[in-house]
Image (cartoon, one colour):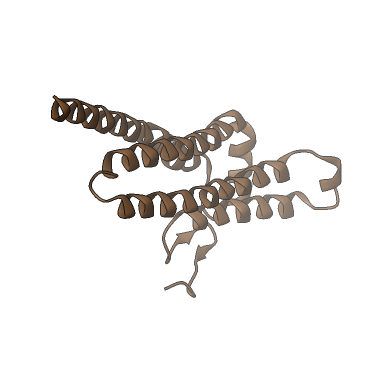
Amino acid sequence: MTTRTTETSSRIRARRAGLLYLLLIPLGIFAILYGPVALIVPGDAARTASHLIASEPLFRLSIVSALLSQIVGIGVTLALYQLLKPVNKNMASLIVIFVLAGIPITMLTELTQFAALQLLSDANYLKVFTVDQLQALALLFLDLHEYGLLSPGYSGAFGSFPWVI
């Protein structure tokens, strides 16, 4: 009788982890691929700025999607911990530590996208910069965001970073 309860409990945990993991797919696709790819023109600050201003709600939605995917990632990690704890508690704990250490860092990279939007706003304190300077700075922040998410050797809006191996 105990074996059946444990087996059912493991199945429920596995299904919960799988469903949460599947939820990451549409959130990640929208946050990383659809939103930024549709709006950012690598190397062209003026066109990127006009796309972001024209589609600001879409860009903001991609930021929210990225943040939600990180929150769901916490749920996936905890569900996997519950599932893998009976196999090896130390390794399951190590997974939680590594994943939960990376999630806040990934969430902080979203600030660079908010910074790009702020630079393209018509705030009074930004009047000291020319339009070209603001657009270039916005593209720099978007490039930093991509660099923070992608692997070393990235080649983005301002070209490749040769010092990264």
